Amino acid sequence: MPRPTHVTIDLDALAHNARITRRLTPGKRLMACVKADAYGHGAVPCAQTLAPLVDAFAVAHAEEAHNLRDAGISLPILVLEGPFDVADAKTIGDLALWTVVHSHHQLPWVIEHLPRENANVWLKLDTGMHRLGIQIDTLPAIWSQLLEAGFHDPVLMTHLAFAEQGSSELTRQQANQWREALASLPSPTPHTSALNSAAIIGDLPISGDWVRPGYMLYGGLSASVPTTELRPVMSLRSEVMAVRHVPQGDSVGYGGRWIAPRPSRIATVPVGYGDGYPRHAANGAPVWIEGHECPLVGRVSMDMVTVDITDHPNATIGSAVELWGKHIGIDRLAQAADTIGYTLMTQISSRPGRQWTGH
Ligand SMILES: *Cc1c(COP(=O)(O)O)cnc(C)c1O
Image (tube, rainbow, N blue to C red):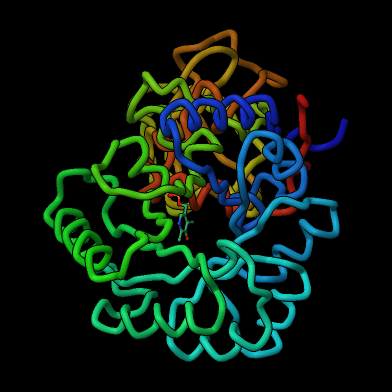
């Protein structure tokens, strides 16, 4: 049998999470973020699954959108980073994509190459994240430039820096800036967009006609608010490949990071950072083996990890292992590895096979 390490993508769970997201955002238009290969889940199968359930897609750059158009995705696709040069703006126009304008220098390119259509230009405002977006004092002038150029329904957007902490001072300041900016525009009030997954789940009181979830669609953040019933879409699974007894006081793995506090039974599992398992996972990080949660022990290698199965005598060679998925929530593992679930999803390498189920 070949190496049993593989990633499963549950497209039914993805569709389920999209429906939950709809339920949490009544009356809003839903733009599903499928950038970075749908957070590592496969942009084409994910977009095909989501297409009947959402209003639009978002990707980071035009090439990502090109792949979706090639696969027959005809819904609007917003390019979040906007054009990088005038040729890129032409590509965006030719593919009938929507684009963000985050800086003044992109404006002439967009005016030259984008068709005059509703909602296809999204002007991004910097309300305090200080990464992308035009400054608030330049908004009225740029806004009228867009209108004069014939874009009669641009969307105004912003991005929150700390939505995970709903009540933070930073979010409060951004919300104030956002309100002031909207008030500075002539009526009618434009269509707007501000909320990502954490802001949706945190139910932040910030206005916007469009929501832009990514992470929650893939089942991230499910543990922070269990009542949302989000389901994990990605599972990383394998099987135990070897078992050994390690005497008390002996160490396991590179650098001898873990020392057996008692005579121990150690399972070796063929998954490592070369597959996308986080190298910084600490001793004690949870691994699901043969129906039990067991602690990772010793450093993560490129190809393998070692797990303490002393308390689970049924676990043996060939036992099923889940590294993350239904039993081991991705946010929990991320916490044990001093990272976030987003990096685990997007850093799955091409080595473990990917299988799509459902739909
Ligand atoms: C990626 C991204 C999102 C989605 O964020 P999640 O935290 O995954 O929901 C929303 N808006 C912008 C501008 C983004 O870049």
